[in-house]
Amino acid sequence: MGSFKFPIIIEKDSDGYFAFCPDIQGCYTQGETYEEVLENIKDVIKLLLEEMNETGTKLPETQNVSFTTVEVAI
Image (cartoon, rainbow, N blue to C red; front, side, top):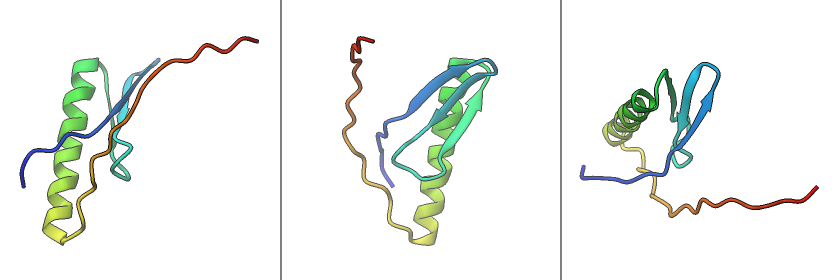
């Protein structure tokens, strides 16, 4: 199939880490550590892409994502 790059979002909460890939519907996972959630999301992405390929579903196109911070005065 080749190699793909997808943006992922990783959030820390009281239970560990949560990660999701906004380009692939239903692609999310969790882990106790940052390293664990990073490996988990890679595994989930790979499994979903393999399933899409096997079923003939169109693979998602990777998109450029910008991340920044903004200052808001209140």
